[in-house]
Structure formats: structure tokens, C-alpha cells
Image: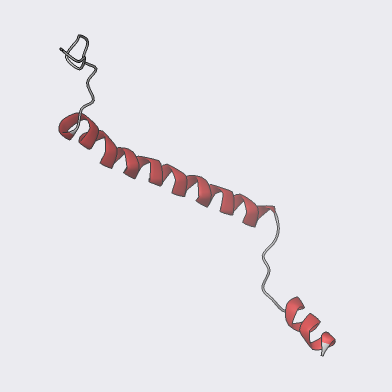
Length: 65
């Protein structure tokens, strides 16, 4: 039984090597760049056209009693 498990483990298609690792890193970087671009495309219009934060200087929020 242990020999059978080892043989199955050895037959797995395990990809190794610097080419595969480099490709995986490039895919990760590309996915991250796409995520940032899509996030900015959603966030910036909402922030600047729908909801704008303002700082109000003055006593408008202080109690007046």
C-alpha cells in the first residue's frame, strides 16, 4: 500500500523550474494591476462626483447655548 501511494505521488504533474515561477509571478503582477485599475475606475468617479468630503471651518458644529 505505501508503494502505491508513493507511485501516485510521483506521477503527479508537478511543474517546477524558473520559467514556471517567473510566469506565475508575472500573472500575479498582471492580476494586481488589473485589480488596481478596476478599483480606481469605480472609486474615483464616486468620490469626485457623488460623495465629496468637506472640512467645515467655523463654529457650525459647536453647541450654541
